Length: 321
Image (cartoon, rainbow, N blue to C red):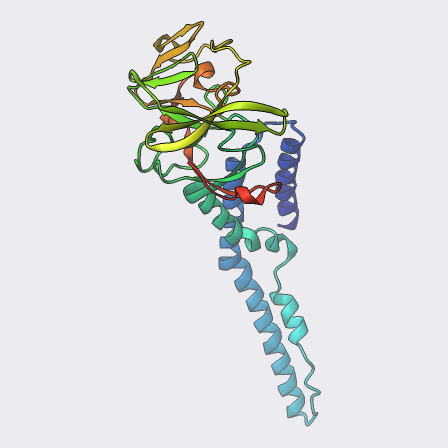
């Protein structure tokens, strides 16, 4: 068992190392699921077999010590009462290969359940959601609002609530589902979404867009026009870059692309059933549904709702819309 355990642990380390050095495309949900299963098997074996065996050996040692003492006493020899507590403790102690498997199972199980069905942490990697979310924000994603899903395969177990316009949602990137993206829900199934001349309309109704003071981007050392938008009752801010044209350049060939009409002024799309139209709040610096298409319901991960840490700006901790 020690050798087999060493091989299993080495396999986990090799997978994580290859992922870290970008030699393979990792899947953390799968890795966590496998770790839970493997450590769970060791935990069951520990409770049903290995721990009883160690307790039996400790009891045998204690019985042998008591028998020896009785035999010496019968011969009139005063036994010195040798202390066997240390030897007994060594017999009861978990070996390293159980300590690193069965011993970690409760912690790994708790993380697995929490991450799979309740809340999952994410780190914002790009500026597509500025000014709502900044690069380096560490956020929490609610995994049950839109319905519970099986980890790894993402199959829905419960219906939950349907995503609403204005929600900030994490989803699996349609062209490459192994990647997680975050954008704002702009269109729900059946909506006609138009983004023409940098003005958003939904089902023919313009979305309010009120100017507010310009936003200074510290990374590019530039000011951008900033507006306050109300979408689905949620008030948030968006950015526009006057240096960027309104037309969409380099749109992919995606499912239901025939539902979209592209022009020099922008794009108009009819959202098909079971799909969502997503856009970043940094409207002219976001690769979103205008480029790669609609997000299917099966790709939904959860609703982002809270910044729990930003190591360069602690003042950003809190909820957002």
